Length: 81
Image 1 (cartoon, helix red, strand yellow):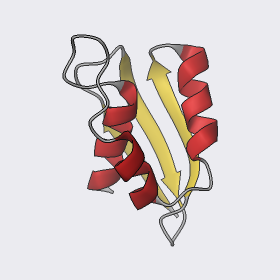
Image 2 (cartoon, helix red, strand yellow):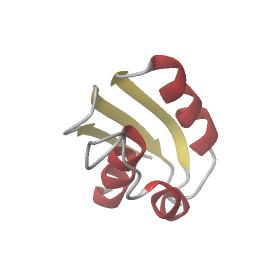
Image 3 (spheres, helix red, strand yellow):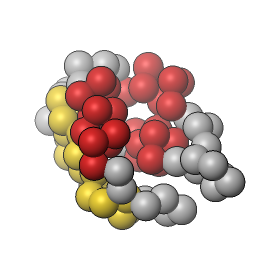
Image 4 (cartoon, one colour):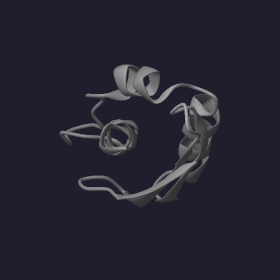
């Protein structure tokens, strides 16, 4: 198992905690701060998915006028894993 704690940048959430198994399958994702219901939903939707699949789906998503978003920050965290 791998545990990642990622400090976000440019979003309302401040931190993402991620747990991956040895095959890079997401076991758990939780966000600190941000839109609680939406971020819980993202965490549930990506659970059981391979890290690379989540990166390809979420990378580059923007939030309004910002150059990033919570989903994009999740993709960035997974890229560092």
